[in-house]
Image (cartoon, rainbow, N blue to C red; front, side, top):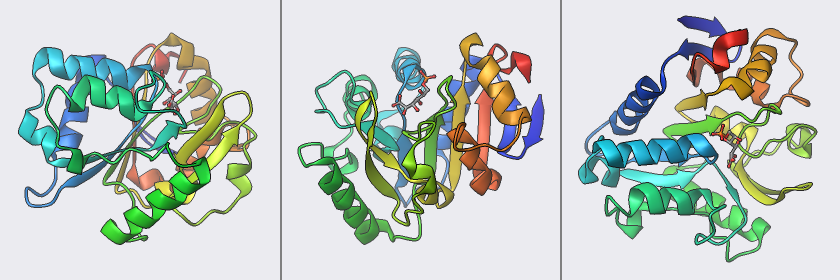
Length: 239
Ligand code: 6PG
C-alpha cells in the first residue's frame, strides 16, 4: 500500500523490504561523490546493522563510500551503549572497516553547545550551509517525537537556522540533533516505524490535526516532498 499524506509518502512494507530499501538508499547516487548519511538511534537501526552483517547485504566498498553522521545523538562517549554513532560503529562501520576519515560523530568531548557549533562549522566548510544530509534516517517514538524533538520542546518555536543544535531534554539529558531547518535541507528523509506499539501514535500523526508542539514528527510536513515513511503492517494497523 502506498499513500500520500501531508507528511510525505507512506508505504507499508515488511521488515526485510524496509532493510533492502535502506541498502538501496545508502548505495544510490554518484559513484564519484561520497553520500552523506544521517543515521538515527533506537532499536530499528540496530536490527538493520545486524541484518546487513548477517546477510552480507552491503560490501565494505559500498559502506566505505558514504560519509557517516548521526541525525541526533545523546551527549555520551562513543563507547556508551547509548551512543547512536557508537552503536553504528560497533555494529556496521567497524565490521566493514570504514576508514576514520569517513566517520563524523558529534564531538561529545566538547560541551553540547560547542559540539553543535563545531559540527555546524565543519559541515558548512565541507558541504555548504544551504544543504544537509543526502539521506537522513529518522524513527518515531510512541510519544510522537522524532530525532530529539520531543513534545513541548522549545526547539519547535526556536526558529534556528543552523542544521544542528544542542538541547537539554528534561528527564533525558543533553541531546544533539538536526534542527527542523536542517531537515528541510536534506535531499531525502526516510522515517521507519515498526511494531504494534507505534500504531496508535502513527494513526494520530497521519490522520489528526496538525499539532507539532505535541506531535513533533508532524514537522515533516515542511519537507513532505522529500519524505518517505516506511512502516510495517503492525504499525500501520490503525491508519
Ligand atoms: C534515538 C532517536 C529516536 C528514535 C525513536 C524510534 O536516538 O532514540 O532519536 O528518535 O528514532 O525513538 O526508535 P525505535 O527505532 O526504537 O522505534
